[in-house]
Length: 175
Length: 158
Ligand SMILES: Cc1cc2nc3c(=O)[nH]c(=O)nc-3n(C[C@H](O)[C@H](O)[C@H](O)COP(=O)(O)OP(=O)(O)OC[C@H]3O[C@@H](n4cnc5c(N)ncnc54)[C@H](O)[C@@H]3O)c2cc1C
Ligand code: FES
Ligand code: FES
Image (tube, rainbow over all chains, first blue to last red; front, top):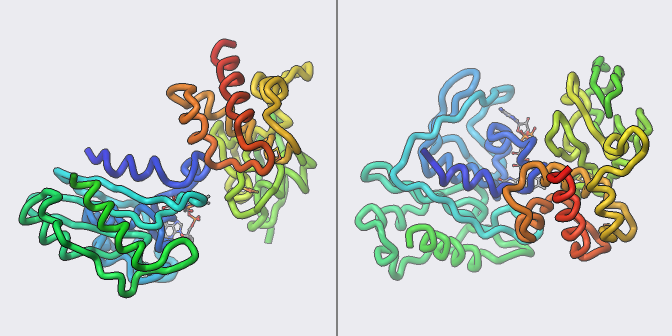
């Protein structure tokens, strides 16, 4: 149903990490460079906990922060189907964490572009979404540049580099 | 507070009362004396502590001992034959000189055994990707890749 999601999962860390890590642990931890958050937001997943359902778009609230309350446990995550769902990441060559990772999903007329690794928390690139909703092709993205303000800069890459990477990844996915 | 756990390690039943935060790597090394499982980083990066938990390779520094309750654990000490004959993967590491200092080797061998069982093919790229979770500071990986391919072939033929 969602090969893009399976592909994302297949590139998390290494075999031993994948043998143990869970999606609940990954999203509850809300690492700014984790992969699953991009899928949760782009596909508008529903996070079910032992207390309630949380919309994917409202789950991640900041750097290592989520809408979960103390003691609340994620019990399942539902991903709705999409006509287009693909993830691309530029992995840090040492850790394999995303320097930038982008999930593009198209569900009916709605397009969501969710970006992980580049900011303090996963976020949507609304300008790219609007362009792709009008026409789902790389031409629609001509001239579109993500602003580097507020993006992460560290020893691996500065904010401008990450902003550029996001643009490249979106084009790779759509093209 | 301690918690009672029972697990199988290399075929032997083991029961212990453990601190809830005790790592599987600490249980193996400090409590059971199975020091073949090495600890290189303790942060789940290097893979030296790789063991099999119910048949799947895991970094034992990233598993709590209590999480292994009821499980079957296989370490590097448990893979040779009863007569001491090396496991085909161990034999291949020796034959192809897949090690220098040997610190990473137990984890490499345990990771490689799973790779041999699960990899769709034994191409160099597949082997390198399959060993992404195991770091070696000495060899440059060339002979490790050779050893893993030969060991995996021997396992598949045997
Ligand atoms: C070497 C290495 C490489 C990695 N590479 C990547 C990568 O490329 N991409 C990527 O996305 N991630 C990567 N990771 C992170 C990995 O995906 C996470 O460590 C893993 O998913 C965490 O899941 P867990 O079940 O082990 O959670 P734990 O580590 O057990 O828990 C993490 C946190 O979440 C809480 N928690 C766990 N489960 C739940 C739940 N169901 N409900 C509520 N709270 C919960 C815990 O209390 C804890 O605070 C890497 C990790 C390592 C060690
Ligand atoms: S000691 Fe466990 S991965 Fe390094
Ligand atoms: S042989 Fe020394 S770390 Fe691999």
